[in-house]
Image 1 (cartoon, rainbow, N blue to C red):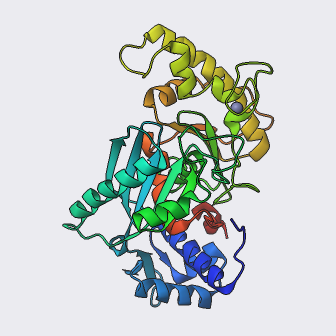
Image 2: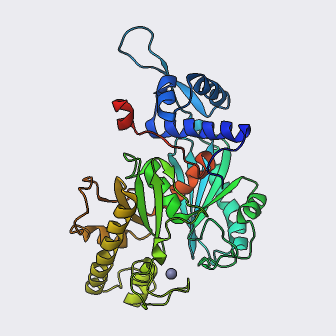
Length: 385
Ligand SMILES: [Zn+2]
């Protein structure tokens, strides 16, 4: 994945995404606002706006009242211009989201899978998409412009990696995005689940107010997604944020990654199930045992949060994940964090607002905004300018 646009076409595509994401985050903006927020020239914004209007991705949103003279004409995303599909693959199910271009969730469905291998996914997903679009045909939604698929795999290289994904069959595929694009007939973007969760919360959830968001994502394991200065930080190989495999207990529990004592062997859904000796966190779980487990997990997670603060200095650290019980239980116990090195924002730790859908909703934003979530000033920074 390139970090910077490398030719004219990519630059234009990149700038379109910059403008679209600015509109998605801020609602309605004038062309002058867009130029200020994105750093593009006034002429550049005008050209892109004309193109996006022609493609029905944005619409004219009227003029703001007040002030002197003719107020500028505002632009907004045209939610009816198209739809995107977001998919989060889990070991036993997939969560599928149909969203409009403004990010509003139109349909959301969890589909149990006998196995999350590529063949089963390629066979099942088209049926779910067809059921969504059959419903959508009755309302005013546009065509599907792409599919984002996320899973607890190393997005920088599913195949050939030492750290194999928990999902079977994906390591053997040299280019899973190409295989799925072929199978589904839509452009497919692949991403790591924690990165997608950070994007989902940044665009639609608790991270909306912030330009720097670190999102701890408790899928079956534990990952970290980083939106830094308004863009997804992926690292040199696309695998930034593998906090689950930071060793916190030298010589501790063995991990599939080859190390011992990795954080996610102690703080994750998988660890909770193993420690409590259950196959699901349901009513059968002993409440006292769960509370004790959450105490221990929160204490270890607190250390990780301070480490994240020291490394990245984010506006906030979000905790999100598949199991509301785990996320709520851990966040409730994070009240007494170790004191920070320097004063931190009051938003030090927040719970995600997308429930179990952070990653799937982030996945739905990938076809439109890509991984190169553009550098954007926040509204606060803009008003200071
Ligand atoms: Zn590990």
